[in-house]
Image (cartoon, one colour):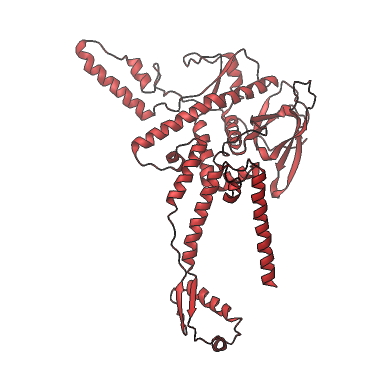
Length: 450
């Protein structure tokens, strides 16, 4: 009966593999190999990726987790600043508008905004819930002119459009007229909350053809998991010391079974018990009669070359140098160059992506009259390639030496103020540049349905 069941299961699995192969022939988009359309099916790569796939990859994949967190930690190493106008002059005092918006854009708000940015990298897009102090229910329009209590970052998997504007003549055609948020509650339960679009800000692109941060490297991450799991399983199999008993042809199994007081069919269980005792103890004697015992050991291939190939592919997909991604440094010069590339990559993301997201978020708050409108505003960041405090002091020391050398001509090359500024200090006091007090804001309770 068992053999028939095994044959039936194997036959069903074989039919399933053939069906998947035929599907690959019908759907020409499965894989990039024009000669073998079912290649992805054989490799174990998914054709369509869902939020759950990307979330599980981030949650359980060390390389993917590191890639997302390295981008976020670099891009949000310091908080941005929103100024009035298009040019920043640190010597000028804050304008009236900048003083009024400073209590809104606190360090706590930027921390939650960075969390939403991280969730956007994982799941293509994320949502930000706006906690407006208007006392209204979440499914109602915002009463404009009230303050912002806090913002909450939510995953794309817990937020979905509930209804869509289908009026082709409407400016909001195709946009959600209501969102549905699945809130996780203590104890593993959840509830669904309807939220008006006024109270939601979307970070990223939630269209069907959007490409997520982790998607181009997903296949490489799958291969990395196979290499890691396969090599680990190989080492485990060898460490388990599975034993092979080779009996001589003259052995009478009936006589051997009678020694243990069991039938011939039950003799295998006795052998398994003996093997367990051998693997469990340090000093265990295994007695045999007309049999030789050898461990089943296979040569474990070095996973390094295969792992490195897939690691390079994954690093290229997320645009992070492999040495930065895994923390490997083979030389000071190579490490420095990779770090400069990483800084430039994150600085570019700040200027070309995050700045526009923050401007849109600011426009949303202006529309809700949380903050006042302004004719022109700009998002500014500090330079990630800026010299460290030690490098600044080294530069100031070199400038002082140049001055000492140039005293023979009777003129100093650098002024005292220039040297102080190069060292990272203001010209009129001894406070380092960039130091200031941050407004942490106030912590508000969890979202509740009204």
